[in-house]
Length: 101
Length: 316
Image (tube, rainbow over all chains, first blue to last red; front, side):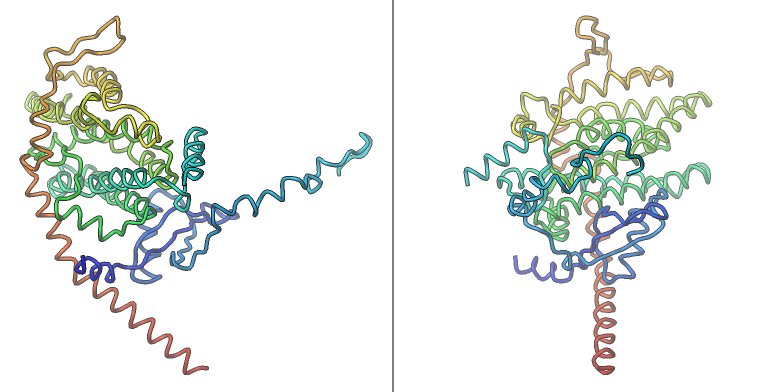
């Protein structure tokens, strides 16, 4: 077991990969990979995730810097939006004569 | 605990995906780690029988295609290892399990690739069987696994087509070439059927896995589907499936097939196939020979980071 944990220390860090599939679109998460540093992460991402013209731009972020919300908090985080339908344009009744609004 | 379990079951029933940070039963996590890592190992070991022919491909076109295919397998392995890592196992731990023989990989890769026609048969039959298994997994319940499978499936269909094309070219070639294609089909047919795993009656985990949507069809269902489509494809090639009992069953609407030699299957699983030792030795050696590269890259990255930290400190 101690041998294993030594080996694990030598493991290259994990990176998350984001790809912009074409000009004008957001970068989107596509997966992850291991690399020793950012340059290698971009090179590996190119080889692993863009072999078929999947993108024109890559972002890599070391996974340990990604902070995520807790799924157990989903209720308290997102439920309050449910009763605020007045945030949507369809909430408002306008006379038919009003155009382009 | 029971409330967590109930919430989990409800999500499964509603066809919702389970994500890495969601609560899940230990057994679900364990089963997934086993299944996904086995799948990843199969992709990586699967590179070896085909790598055998890259330098001897009969034309530059075939060589480029085979190289691309083997590179894809490496990519598939990486997608899958990454998916398994989201369940809390490290990459090195998985590789260790492969190298010590604790983890299994698909038995099909323990057969040798002795002629060029084997590249055709592998693409057509082995990748064909893999696709049959993998397409339903694009809707599996664990999100990272399902998303990895979507990528894999998109890429896999080129693999099957290039294999079929090799078989077609050989089948339309000289008598010797056609014989070579038939010989490859004879050797790969039964091992390909075994790829779907033991019969349902002897597959104790199937029921639970189907319940969890880790599996969407049983081994026998998928095997039948594979036989039904592949027999028709063999007709196009003008080749004979090496099963004298193969017969269309009007009543069932499926092909009936002869008995599978499960003793052979278990024997290969236990490590006694023609190439088990060779495959594992090659993997272990690649891992050990690459150790200095992994260490050097990490040392270089650490040094570079330290230098840039020092510079920043001095500037401040």
